[in-house]
Length: 276
Image (cartoon, rainbow, N blue to C red):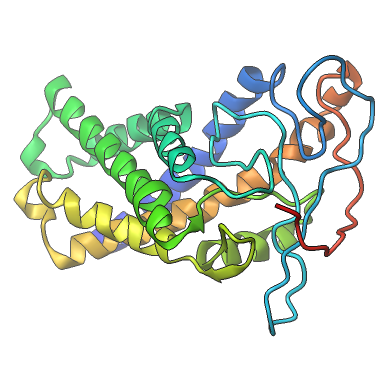
């Protein structure tokens, strides 16, 4: 029963992350964030520009274009959404790690996770009260930050992998499910190709292994580490699903009439190799 409860709890936390994303991000980034193809981010915006798209075809797979769009303004909420198709330097990856560590979704998710764990009194070694909540919140933030450090900066820099997310233009639901699931295991390289997402898989595993150094002894088992790692991967998929809809979210809400969020355009993909 405890295992089933933890599984359900992980799902609820993932759903809560997405719902809070919908409520938090909309009022914060509408004036500044633009979807794929929004132009250079300076001056007045056109009413309905076409999206900037790119395609990188996996050699010998026949999957077609996978990374097809990017935004032109940096997002405070989701710093890992790509703002250009070119490669990201090691310094850029370090900056991405820092921005992710302090981004609102990380803080909100850590607060919710700490509150949920406090309600279940897990881990019991923390006890109850505000001090216990602070310990749970700090541990959750540390796990998220170390996850980003290993995934977005250290391993990605060494292996020359691109940790950013490239959203689709006007994705369908099942198309987004397939794309987000594939993106968990397939990443873009600095050279513009595709490969297994080693940094995205080893990063969370390294972060959760490191967490055994500061989590209570009851959490320092192989089973607990694997459980946390699985939750991290599930959250990553859920996050990709939401980010993939980011460029079309405000258009669907009709906010493009304010001439702040342009129409993200058609669903057509070019399939051409990006010119870096």
